[in-house]
Image (cartoon, rainbow, N blue to C red):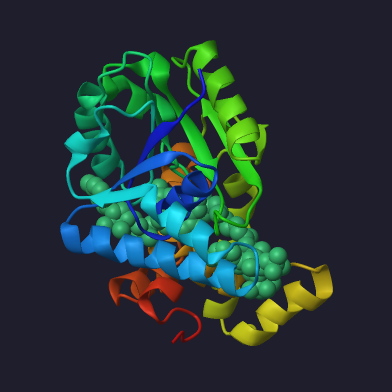
Length: 285
Ligand code: CAA
Ligand code: NAD
């Protein structure tokens, strides 16, 4: 049963990228945001990303128009009723996600429809428990920027049916052409368990005045061959998102290495969220 109609909840950095990836793969996409203005902004982000792809000669003007026409931005959760798959990519806040899984679990018409979360760190089993369809809930974790990164983590919970995992594996591989890896339902899964302590260590190093932001980043780019340094990557991910991931991981493991440092908390308090707000460790246009 190939998935042809999917939905995305949240049209921020990740939701807009996930909607773009699905539409480029030929799927019909309903994209739900909190307001009509936010839905329009999500559409604008996707159009900007597609224009970039067109300018680089990766897609034609026709592809751009066809892809955009497959995406239906809205503020109405009810528009998800006929979807075969919904990927939730709203803010990394447990209560927001619990509310969404409670509502959307009862909106979906098809008993076999899958409700997935793109969460970076919140336990999947909790989202399944409130959805009323726990065997059809799992984590499907894309990476930023979604149109570029090949990886998707697949995270079944204790209550996910094996058939749900099988369907998501073939969706990721055959429909999207991405590479899945299998993770267990513990905060941070595979990649963030390794990445987040590294990013938080870089923020602590900068906070201690040990080195400049530029030198910390250059160290990892030129010394270790990373595509970008940890502070620039933190800005790309979003400092509020890193703070939320660190808090979830700290709650789960009680290890100080996951605890957000005070500088990160103060930057989020100040609205310095990284690239998406125009200022983080670096300024952005
Ligand atoms: N949409 C579509 N395509 C994009 C894009 C976007 N937003 N951004 C870049 N691209 C494409 C470009 O078209 C280009 O493709 P070609 O080489 O085929 O022309 C390619 O990606 C490289 O782009 P650029 O040359 O413009 O930029 P770059 O070489 O500086 O790469 C980058 C940008 C891909 C972001 C790279 O710096 C990178 O890989 N950074 C690390 C990203 C990373 O670690 N992501 C994981 C974050 S953690 C996470 O996601 C999990 C979580 O839960 C927090
Ligand atoms: P973001 O802040 O860019 O966007 C979140 C969006 O969710 C906002 O546009 C907001 O308006 C919307 N939203 C909030 N509540 C909503 C609701 N009730 N209904 C509909 N929309 C709602 O965040 P993001 O970076 O796109 O992260 C989204 C999810 O993806 C989080 O769970 C995050 O942990 C995960 N994630 C983030 C990254 C990353 O690098 N930023 C990578 C992988 C996974």
